[in-house]
Image 1 (cartoon, rainbow, N blue to C red):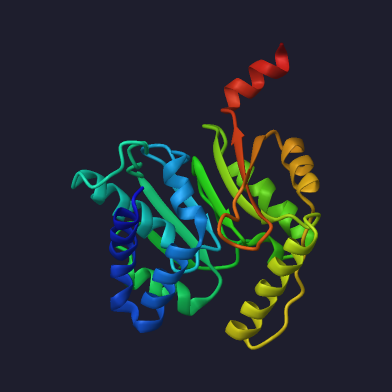
Image 2 (image 1 turned 90 degrees about the vertical axis):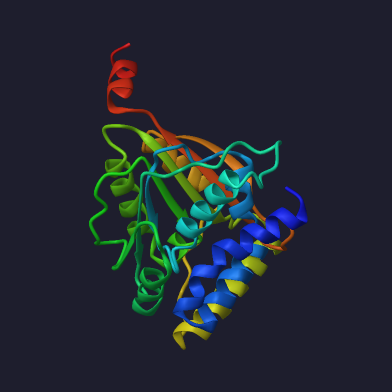
Length: 247
């Protein structure tokens, strides 16, 4: 996508946050412009049409605004020929622990819903796409496993897709940069220190494999010093899994 097109898309996706205040708007613009995951989701066509999206630790609900703006830009014929058509999702539900961010998201978003809650205990309902971006390392490892098990259940019986971005604890100095930035951001926003619970990429792959996911690991730190990896984890439909077990 040309710089002009991406700038227009960022402007369109960030615009709804003006109603929530200057900080949410500036944060949305900065996050959408600097974090490579948003453009990569579109360039790789990772989210299917008619997706029922569950966004855990959704923050301001940027994923909903981004996908909505992308579809609008495509309809306006302002879309690169080399990229697939952006998806039109069927539903979006975000869960965010920070009450202020959840309220800002509800004020800004035109599509979907956001509730304030803890992903360790909140009801997930049923989805066919689950997004968890840079969230699980804020909870302990047993709780991480519990969330992933409940994600698997939310994707049953239709099967579906988990998009999980993690920081690879085995990535050397890049991981230490990632962890330092996360720790600073937590202290600034929450005025407290929080222990981070990080795992190497191999550990995440082993855990997801044990839950029945077929996983592709995609580097997701372009343009940054971080050690982020996007795990594209697919869970086959229940009947497909049953057939494979009987074979």
